[in-house]
Amino acid sequence: MDNSLKNKYDSIIFDLDGTLWDSTATVALAWQTAINKVDYIDEPMTQERVRSITGMTYDAIFDKLFPALNAEQRQEVKALCATSELEILYKKGGELYPGLKETLEYLGSKYKLYIVSNCQNGYIELFLDLSGLDAHFLGHQCFGTKGNPKADNIKDVVNDHELKAPVYVGDTMGDYTAAKTAGVPFIFANYGFGVVPEGMVATISSFADLQELL
Image (cartoon, rainbow, N blue to C red; front, side, top):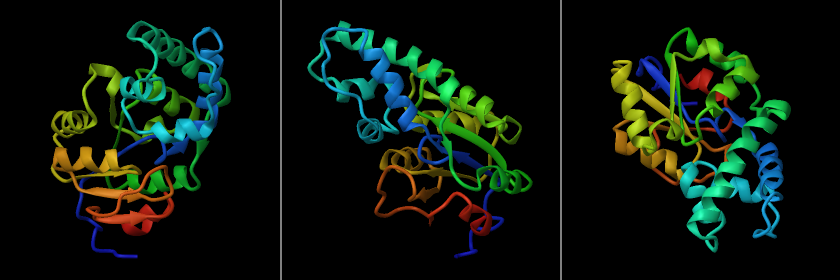
């Protein structure tokens, strides 16, 4: 693997879903539980549908999943899903990617680590609590905090923590676009949910690859 990136950065900002863990099976269950409470949706919520929208902002997710609903219905479903998601995820959790803990321990000894995700408020905190990895991260930001796009949240982390040479690790085209807009180099995690054809400074096939790369 290319070692040219070693000692090039002072910090790493991570996407969450599809990069640090896969919670799509549990989220699908949670959202199905939520939509069962309304009488105007009769389509099943599957893991594949959840994977198809992973990385989008929480508002945009429900616009895409339920385009036929009116604004009031969509808002109700979003609120029900948000509550159910955190409740059921806290009980069942998600699947941490192999080598996550060991790799974060290594990276944390050399770099400042952060998380920026398009998730709702409380989701990153839940991940950190369930995984026991809170001590490895110096900060995080999400869409649910201010309703800002990911690029703005990446910029906030960079500016708030005075990062001089950050790199962003993510798994979707949306992650790449956000990092590029924020002026931050991008490492593509191709084991996640998306496809990024070009523009990355490196590609990893497992989270543990970061140990050799960085």
